[in-house]
Length: 295
Image (cartoon, rainbow, N blue to C red; front, side, top):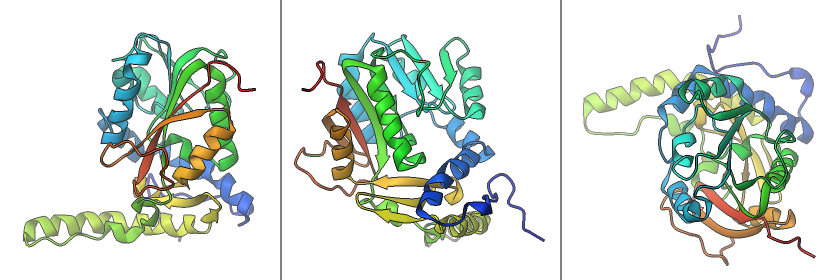
């Protein structure tokens, strides 16, 4: 009998095989299931503020320029970013492609302009409409590399000339890329009660995490500038893109953006323009759509 894994374990379509293209196609199937889990709802409903110092630092950089301007917030989930973004402007539009999470956001913020929409195709939104287009919480990493390009092109299109794009992305050179199920083993403490509690939590999490990691490992791939690998979130329940600082800068510039700033997640410090790498687990990018077309 096949073991049951409740809300998180699931079967992939075995007909997809194990080619590089199949690895990229698997991201949608795996990640959509994770976003529709009870674990995702609990986590996203519990999150209410900045996820890290880098996000807060990036927000502070763009705040004055974007105040009282039209804002687009992509991947809003259950609505964590809504009150943060509305500190800047009430001219706010939020979208998410997971209906279950969007329903949570609509329940919490019933009078806002929230839409069920995929960032790869935002044709329902006007061209050159927003002063800021944001995609937080590394959401852009949850689609394959080609679709990542589609998202950035759509973000470029809907942002007005001279406007800003802000998003975060997992860093292949950061410690998170090395995460495995060993991360869930209990850390030793001389306090027996605390160590016992940590051990009980590990016993609860490890079977599912091992199952998910093992199932997803066949889709792991390394390419020049980026990799596909299982991430620790949701009991190793998601499969994402890890890129590099240099590659993400190159990609943005190739699409017509001007990179204005990059912040590391851990310390919130701005990364130098000449830096080719970073050890931050993920990075926050601020880029500008040129006010005039580049010749």
